[in-house]
Length: 81
Image 1 (tube, one colour):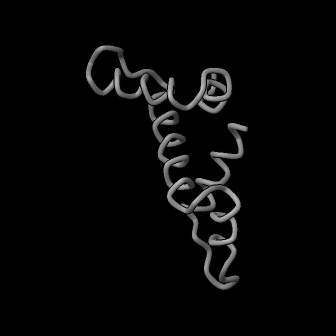
Image 2: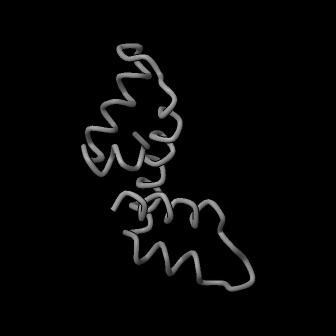
């Protein structure tokens, strides 16, 4: 199962618990660990901007500069909806 599908099915809080368990050594880190962790970090970044709509406005504020990490985070969050 892909990381975004896992979050769709089980929710963000459950996914955070899985990451904590892996980092604590209670669960082994599997192939989806890195993707799951990245998507959780993307959700946190979007939350720091006040949500998806405000993050989109920020990402497209200047048409001459692209905020690549923010655009990637937006795509990650949208893939979980």
